[in-house]
Length: 289
Ligand SMILES: [Zn+2]
Image (cartoon, rainbow, N blue to C red):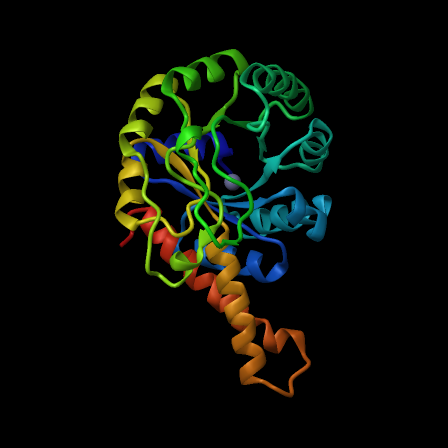
């Protein structure tokens, strides 16, 4: 089985991106894996600190590993937005393939110092683990927001990105290029879309020449996503769209089976809803449309 690093290099070569989908339960994991398996494309499952607190750090590691081994399938596990070294070490010890070490809220110099230190500690646990660093502001919370936050001042500057990559030694960079976490109500209703600063992505890619991750991909214009991938984005994160589908699927199951109490009869509605969204995004990221 190829390591995640090889999968990212292959994606860059092929002009595609690897889909990263956040999950917090077996429903979403089944849906994401089922979609990737159907399309025969590699996939990354992400768990934020909150998501892994719910599902269990060691438990999700074993679940993903069991799928990888039983089906000989390139499914990888990422510790999304990890804000402390202790949590990062916990994930590395559990066998995660990558860690988003997110100290983007700290001043630049402090972000550099602590990220560099974390990389040393994490690579000592697993030399193959990939560490993603973040600079700039992409907002917080994969939720439905009432108002659009002003993230224009927090866009990643290509020069700063280069300095950050060179002085930390990170494997992957998460820039702020017009993306943001969560969705606005109007985006959930399909009335508005997020737009990306494609020129900035091209500049950052040229400056850093390492894999780039687009966070907060939910609700982004499809054409912008295609252009972003062509400009050098190698991983796209989708969370909120999956959460919306999960809830709608669950509500559908409960409405259709008002007297049912058996979880494995109700929950397939949620699996199917999440799977459809995952399929649609994976097709786009892998040029399978
Ligand atoms: Zn994110």
